[in-house]
Each structure stands twice: as structure tokens, then as C-alpha cells.
Image (tube, rainbow, N blue to C red; front, side):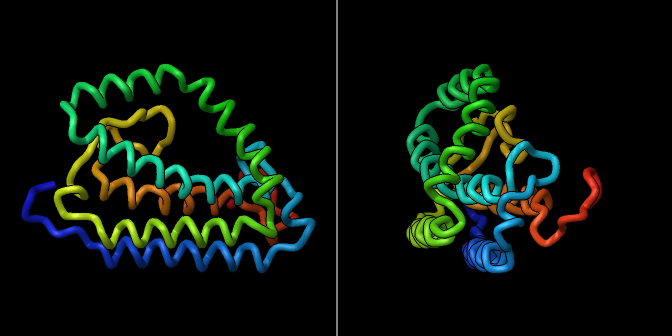
Length: 185
């Protein structure tokens, strides 16, 4: 990103609010059977996948700190860090799956909406206070961890990432679609 480019903060903020509203609509429209039903294309139930979608936003809070720190160091530092993380993809996948299963018991259908509200509120406040220079700062990422991670991501890219993650997983939910055959949208 060039130094003269202005980040579309309003667009990112609108995306955060869109996801917050859609998430509450999903929670409000689901019944007990919907939450317990398997999602499509994952081993998670809908409730576990919904938490995983919230977790994408929680992770971003930590990634922002990491980019602010590693983005100030030589690119080789974050490149090496990303390679180390990529080497640990297998344990990461296991932890990512099991962690969402366990965490959905704490941040269940009754609590995860409030958690997402707090996290998105924090991200919106953080975005509003970021300098253009910080939003242009970036680092290398482990591309094997998530299909929406690029080799190099700026802070702006990190703010945009969780909506892509959310939208992808939203399509895997089977809320309101009990007769949905596996593999069909």
C-alpha cells in the first residue's frame, strides 16, 4: 500500500457491523435442533461452528498486536516466524478444531452473541484510532493456517480478514435447513 492511499475505514466499520447484525439474526433464527445439527463440510455442529466464527474475530484482536510489533522489525523476522507457524499446521488444525468444540460449551448459543458484540466493539474502536502509517504496516503470515491469510498482510488486511472467514463459514451452517443434502449449497 502506498503512503498516499487512504484506508476506507467506513467500509471496514460497515463490514464489522454487517457481520454483527447477521450473527444475531442467525442466533435468533436457530432453534435447539439447528444448534445441534452438523454443519456442512466440517466436523462441527452449527453451535460449534458459530463459536469458531466468533473466534475468528477474537484472533484478530491478537493479530493486530502481533502486526504492530513484528511490522516494525525487518521483514525476515516475520517471514521466519510465519515459516515456523506453517511448520506447525498439523497441531494448529487439531487445536483449532478441539478448541472450538470446547469453547462452544462456555460461549454457547446464549453467550456468544454478547462476546461477538464486545469484540467487534473493541475492533471498531481500535480501527478508529489507528494511524494511516499503522494501517500500512504489515508482516508475513502462515499461509497454510487459513485460506484467507496472504503471505504478507497489512494491518488493514487483518481488519478485513475476519469478514471473509465469517462469510465462508456462514455458507457451511445448516441452520433452518434440516433436509439439506451434504455437498449442496
